[in-house]
Structure formats: structure tokens, C-alpha cells
Length: 298
Image (cartoon, rainbow, N blue to C red; front, top):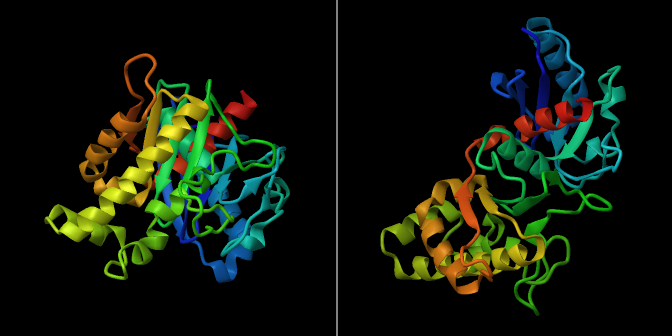
């Protein structure tokens, strides 16, 4: 069996690897721990994983890498990455893996959107926005079938739009950002220290805790305002909600969010933008990286 494409998603805790066949189906998956203290060994670890895969599935020129940070326009490396994996900043993956064909690098959120649009919740749609809600809030934008990266790779960082001005600045200096309104990174501050995880907040909300409901519904209201603004800016047909918070909350998120979209969204054609939950889970980035690499050589 020939491996049409290999996708590698490098995360702060685990690196996920998938193999896609000619129909885009996942035929192999594995993951390995990502130890920030030894991140410099990642190219070697990834290279050995590719060797094992190619010995089993056949050689391929379609290899994609998804990782955090801003990717060079050439798509060969990340030119800005801060945090636990900054040792990978500027790394040319084609050279590091000693590959003849270019290894295609893509931002992890953009890769997740590409994956969802290939075989997940965005399939069949050419104008899509992905919002990932977890520790922080990430995102990606597809317009007319193309995932946007922008001038320096910042396109789609939708967690860093301003909702409340004046407001405290987030990690990229945005005041009152969407990320700080609903990301897990601010849950203690938003609940007076009562909750340390959004999962606990949502559980208390479901059990009828009035204070928890008030805090959660305020966050969802701000998310609705943010999404309505995003709709006006890029006009998607579908919004996909991914990340741990969206997946865990389910209807506790979707029901109030749709109420606020009814309040805030401009609907010149009478119907609102479709809002769905992502379906590919933690493999979305690796699948998208593989799909992206395959597109570049076809």
C-alpha cells in the first residue's frame, strides 16, 4: 500500500502522526510525547517515525508538518514561535529530515481547519471559520476553498480580536480579547477564583448553580458577539467550534450561543451561519497537514 500523504502535528504535549490513503482516509496513526526539554531531538524522532511508516506503506513526497507559530510564506519553516517549542523557530524541516521533496509546514490551527474541511465537519464547504476554544482561543479562516495565512502568518488568530475596550491586554496586547473572555487561561479571574477549569464551571452550570450560569452565559454572550463580527468580516457559510471546551460543553455551549447569534448576527438572506462542533478531535491538525502537503504536489 502506498502512503499518499503523511501528516505530523507537533503539540506542546504530544506529536500526532497520521497516514492518509489516496481517498483521504486515515490508514495509520501514532503519537509520541513532546518533551519541551528535549525538543531539539524532535526532528530526529520525527525522521525515524517517517522511516518506519515508509517501510510499511511505501515512499511518499507528501509530508506535512503542523505546529504552533507563524509560518514563513514559503511554507518551509516557522519564523515566529514563542513558548515551550521555541527551539524549533527557524528550523528548515526539509533539511532537518533530509528529504528530497519539500516538507510543507503549516500553522496548527490552519491545519486543523484544512483537516476538518477535508474529511470532517467542514467537508463540502468552501467558506469556513474554525474557532478552537481551550486553554486559549485559536482559529483559522477558509475563503473560497483557500486557508488564509496573511502577510506574516497572523491570519486566523481570532482569539485576539477586541471585544471590550478599555480592557486588560492579552498575550499579544489585544485589549478585552475573545481569548480572555472564554479561554480556560482566565477562568479563575472570571469566576472570582471559584473555578480553575471551564469543565468544572460548565458542570456547575448544568447542575443549576446560579453564579456558574451567570459566568458561563456571559462568556458565551461575548463569544456570540465575536462570532457576529467575524461573520461580517469574512462571510463564512459555516463556523466550526473545536478544542476541549467546545467538545466538552456541547449543547451547553451551542444552545445559548445560537440565542446570541439570533440577537447579534446580520442576516441579509434571512438565515444564519451554520454552527457545528468539530469532528476530528486531536487528529485534525495532522490530517490537515497531510492534506495540505498532498495539495502542494498535485
